[in-house]
Length: 224
Image 1: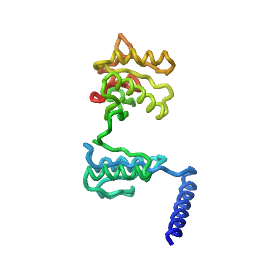
Image 2 (image 1 turned 180 degrees about the vertical axis):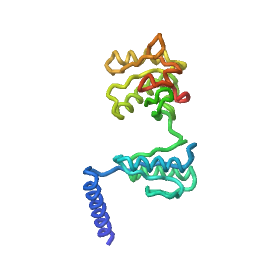
Image 3 (image 1 turned 30 degrees about the horizontal axis):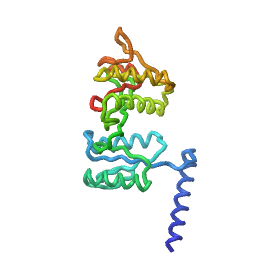
Image 4 (image 1 turned 90 degrees about the horizontal axis):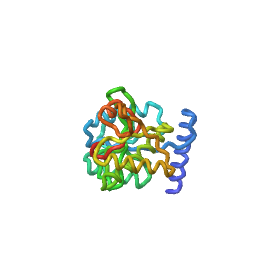
């Protein structure tokens, strides 16, 4: 009896996948990406609205909300508290039900950090800030070198073939510059950007940040 139920479920899932493929023209299984909705400064309503906009834009994955019950057509896994929410997120990731998750205020281990994408206020350009949360390393210079690589990887994944890289003028910036240039000389190609200031160079100031002078702005996580 249990075996029959499993077979029926598999067949049902296959038929749904075929129907989706006919409708969208994409013949592959969609992954599920979770979004936790509690604990953000933006509030639950804004996060849900953003998820709904993304879902309608033709993205190639399904969004699963993890949080309190709200009025939406998106799938929701209901939880009432942040602690319960992150525990449920971990369970869903471990089980493979979701392939990834976007969350806030989660205690990442050292070595994990996130690259943020922003629209710069000066000229409305897209820019990646590497990084914005988490801690790549306990040592600032090492962390910023890793952040630069993470930023380049992210920018390339988003379709920028040769992203320009700048280093924000914070403590350790010159050491990071030397290390990245050595890395470039040794074969890892880095396209260093130029500051909009008259003295140029890849060390960036506040105006460069506001204008979006480079595709990837490297900084320490706290500043980011």
